Length: 241
Image (cartoon, rainbow, N blue to C red; front, side, top):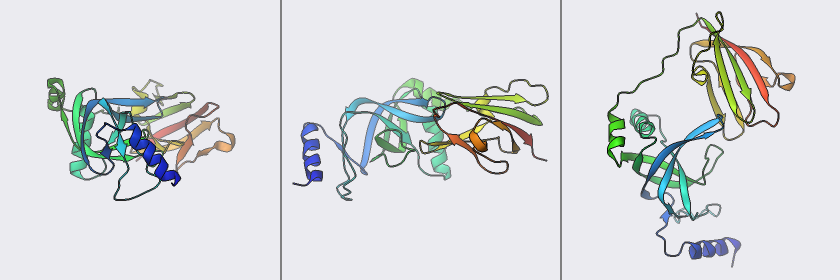
């Protein structure tokens, strides 16, 4: 018996009596949506399931690296797509954070550093299970509007937790919340990139990284996420003419 076949046999024994969900097939799951904050570096939406589930590999693919999971309680939920329908569904998912919901979609195993739970959920539809969730969908969105300033200075303090501060350059008044004035994203679980808001040019003021790190004017500005030694980067954002 091959190692893969043995693992499959052990998995089937451990999930006996459960109705496991096969990866890649239509599924409906219920639970409460929340935002998981990874020390300020990364945030993602998670579905905290009403009851644990188990998963099985997609038998149609026959991929040896796919592994079923048992006792799954938390799933990262995301909308994949950039068309108008996907954007509307993504907004609906965000509005229902903090509420109990039922979600239709397909489960698949984590494949990249962007995937933060072993089991992923591609959301195709999401509906509230209670009146508070239905009310949340009726509330008009309150988009963030940044203050119009000619220039502002940013301090990125990357240590055990990511802390971002923004101040108007002339008055040194705090711009709150700071992270709304700095776009930041991660490539997988390793590198954090930071930048000014759209419509502003970034110019490096200082960095504690050796040899200037990987922060260049007119190009990307990045650093290692969760560094062993804290890194502080300061740059100015100047409004484009």
